[in-house]
Image (cartoon, rainbow, N blue to C red; front, top):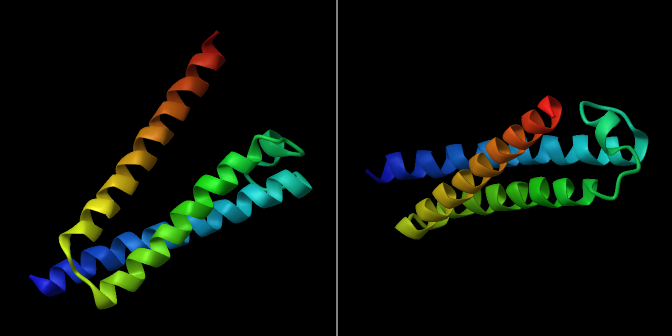
Amino acid sequence: MTTARRRLLLANGVFLVVVGGVQAVFDLLASYAGVGPYGYIFEESPYAIGWVEAHGLAFVIGVLLLTVAVRDLRGFWHVLGAAVHTLLVVAHIGAFIASRDRESA
């Protein structure tokens, strides 16, 4: 059981570190240079800071989960990981629906 819990925390941590880190870099490149997948959206936009903040926070929480996977396997960390993933999924689905509604209007 301990091995499974450790692997789950490691998987959650790696996912958040990789995706959060890469997306934060994309956000910064888009904001400052107008390049990358978000270049046409965030070039010199003040709204990019919210995206950088969200993706940077995902990265930081991923590092936290990787750290506790080695040292502390209490159930709290699994609840935190589930809450973070739920928040990210709901936010991304909401953004997708909002962008789809804007396009159809």
